[in-house]
Length: 67
Image 1 (tube, helix red, strand yellow):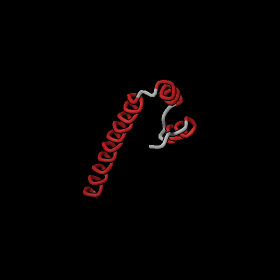
Image 2 (cartoon, one colour):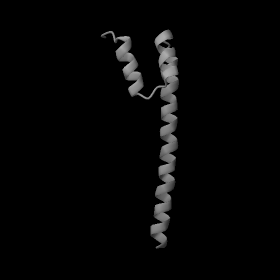
Image 3 (cartoon, one colour):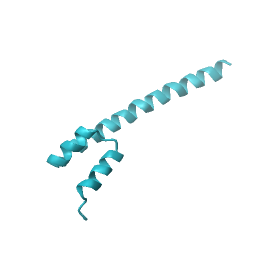
């Protein structure tokens, strides 16, 4: 696998939405756990958003059924 420069790695992490704090910590330590924790947070956020969409879908269904 090709080596990724720190500058490219920083850009990728920024594009992924990582905080500067997480980026700095990762670049200093190269601990995969930092990225794993961030990924877990993103997945949890997806689930929260999916639930909100289900609530809106149900509300829309109820309103259409009523009217």
